[in-house]
Structure formats: C-alpha cells, structure tokens
Image (tube, helix red, strand yellow):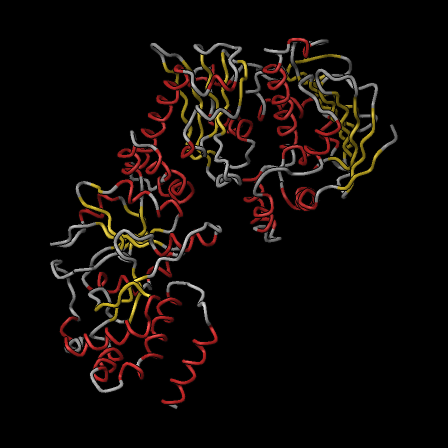
Length: 620
C-alpha cells in the first residue's frame, strides 16, 4: 500500500501549536504522558485477553521500554499492549473525538499563561511528544491482526500512514529530537524522570542503554503499598497518570476496606474542572481492577454520576476476573463497593466542609453544580448531600450552608426563599425580590440547571419548605423584618381605583396573562411577572425552550405595585369614562417591560416600538 497523506483535524492543529510553542516549561512531562499511554494500552490488552487469550500470542509479559540512540538522536518508547490499526491511528492521533472539544477550544485566549490551565484540564497526552521532537513516528500492530502500520508527522498540520510489515504487537514511538533536547538521550536523566513521574506504573519500565537492560521503576501498583511508604509527590504523579491530568489533586483518599467485602481504593478529587464534566453521558472515571488486573475505566455501577469528578482506582479481591461489563451493572458485590465508596467520599467532603481553613470553598466553586445533582438522584443520601451544599444569597457573596441560612431567618419567616436564573448579578436586580430585601429576608440565588429540579424533590429542610419568590403569592405581612424605609413610601392607590386599573389591564391583555393582581413583593418596580402555583417556573420554561423542548408557554400572572408613582397615577385615571381604551397601550407596554426584565424575547417587537413611540410623543 502506498503512503497516504492526511491532515490533522483543525482542533488538533491548534492544540499542537500551543503545546509546541508556549505550553509547558517542564518539557519532561512528555515522557510521563507516553509511558502512561503505554501502560493503558497494556491494561486494555490484559483485560481483552481474559476472554480472548489468543490476543497474547507472542509476548504475554507486559512491559514498556525506553531506548535512547545518541547517534541517531532518537528516543524510542515501546510497549507490547493492545496496539492500533489504521482506523485507530486516524481517530486517536489525527482527531480529537472527545465531546466538548469545540467548547474547550473556544475558551482559549491566546495568552499562554491562562491557556496552560485550560489545556491541563483537557489533557494533551500523545501530542506532548512534539514539545521535544520535530518528527514522531508510530510503528504499531493491533493485537489479533496481521497488518502493521507506520504513522509519521512533523506536527505542522499533516501526517502520513503506510503499511509496515516490521510492526510487532503494540506500539513503538520514535521521537527525532529537536536541536537542544539531547538531554533526553541521557540515561541518568531518563532514570530520574521515570522515578519521579512513573514509579507507580504497575508494569516494568525498562531502560535499554548500550545493549544493557535496567528496570527504572518500582513496577508495583501504587495503591497496594502502605500509605506510610508513599510520598505526596508519588500520590500526585499517580493522579496525573490515572486522570490524564496536569493539575494537582484537591484531596486524596487512600484506604483498604476489610470485612465481608474487601477492596482497596485510591481516589482523587481534582483541583480543576475536567473538560468533559458536563458531557451529556455523565460518565464516571474511576478505574476498576480485580487483583491488580485492569477491568474497565467505564463502569457505571461503580460510582453515581454526581460523583463523576472523582478519579482513581478501585481494586477488588471479591469480583471474578472474567466478569463482563454487562454483568457488572447488576453485581451485588459491586453494589456494596459502590455504597462504601460513596459513604467514604461524602464523609471526606463533610470533614473538609467542617474545617476552618476555607479550602472547601474551592471544591464547591469547582464541583458544587455536579454534587447537587445527588439531591435529585440519590434519595438515600439526600440529607448528607444537602449538608454539603453551599449557596450564594442576597445577603452573602460567600456561599453559605442551609444551616447558616436558617440561623439568619427573620421572625415570622416560615420558608426558605429561592430565585433561579442564569447570572447572580441579574438575579440580585430581579423585581420579584424587592419586597424580600426590604424586609431583610435572605433569598438563595440559584444559577445551576439542576437548581430547577431539586427544591421540588427535596421539599423541605428542617421542616422549612423551599419557596420560589417568582411563583405563587407573596404575603410578607407576617415577617417581622427591618424595613426602615416603609414609612417613607407613598400610600398605595385606593382599593377601588386599583380594582378598576386591574380590570382595565385584564381587558387589554386578555389571554396573554393568567391573571393581573396587586403585588406585595414589589418596592421599586411598577410590575413583574410570576408563575402560578403548580405551573412550570419561568426560568425552567426558558431553559426548555433553549434546548428545543416541546411544550406550550404557560401564561403568567402580572403583578402591579400599588405604591409605585406610575401605577398610582394610572389607577387614578382608571375610574374615568373610556379609561379602558386609553390604558390599553400602557398595559401592553408594562407587560412587555416585565417580559424584557425576565429575559424573554418579545413576540411582536414592532407593536412594542409603536406603543413606546406613541407614549413618548405625548410626553415630549
């Protein structure tokens, strides 16, 4: 077969440019990434060989070798793992098939220092080789196949693929080093890099130098060692390996469960948000081993989706080696392991939340939106998760617990008040919270999509119901607040005048609204929209429309402020003959104003503009 030339996916080219020119000052991490990939390839073959032992034909003992050649100025990294065929080479080395790639790249600013953090969340893996090499060759043959392949690229936009009959099972990566990178041919430096970054790899990493072989790492699974024998640096590098990440873990949890079910867990909570954390598939990423044999890194039954930010390994002594991924979903042993893992993780988070060092806030800012999904999904542990939740409020930019919220409730306040939307600063200016702020009542500001669902599922916290300030009536008269400006506000319009104004508004707006009524929640704004009890919340309805979810728009209730100067004047005119006709345009304008404040797109902007012009003409 002739050599075939292909172009990198645009996203790969952009990543390569950043990696090569501006990303890492610590270039030696390229070796960590390539050794980590080689280890994963061996793990995958070992698992596949449990049911297809013929795949191990040739060499059953897995290992990774490093071969520096000072004359040719090449460094070769070889593994005898699962290998790749032509399709794998194109998909794995020519494209990034990961969900969220476009969104990730859109966040890149061009500022190298800022982009390092983002790239670290995404991971560059194989492409890090181009930090030190101006040409990379991959010679590979997939286990169970006879054809071998050679992939070659200078990282500048194209790569070539051709058949290679010399390829053996696994992958051989040949790096032709850039000028000035000859240190990576030095045996001493290679040993130090392996010891620093890859000592935890459970396979031997063998350095071949001058025809002599030397194992450069401990070649024992890190999680099987005693905690007292593992340094913080070793834990960190194992996290980098298992999570394919570049940040530092926020916390590390390493323990061995003993008793009826025995397993070892080495778990990490990342310091930064992984790029795929909000992918629709919501996969967890803890690797499952059985007696140090890799089984899968995609076991849905191992951890619930709301803990999908956790990385690490779980090694069980009680699961059969030949268990299929389908059988894992209903295995009672795995169910008990899952229960134990969740319990330990939530206990660790509780301990962190109760500490006074403020470190928990960093976790909450990064993963709080994910953890809150457990309020909706995990009935058994809902109470534990609720104690871990933190909320920004109208009285506190620093997120607080619900226990703190309850301790600050006003006398006569019988509910936990919430408002949901897209941005905190916009919510703080919402007309619906004016009356609550005037009374000194704190309102939770909810901006995560899951916030639309869990309050209705939870119902109450310590016997106090959750209540949206944008839904239902708002009788604040029983709350003994601290409204010092109440005496300064004008008297409300007369009740008969308000009744006439409300009747005129109802006539003008018709079925566009469910009702028009006087408001107890407005202070500075003339009008606002609220949802009726039992109707879909306004923010949730907006989210559903954004995601093309079917459903009719529920008509809303228009509340009007009887103390507002504009409403008082309109009410005074509402009892005169012919007022209903004169007030029609004003009613529509105020209704449109309320919709604009809610972030809605007006269905008839032309009519809004016409009415506004007519009103301005009268006062000009």
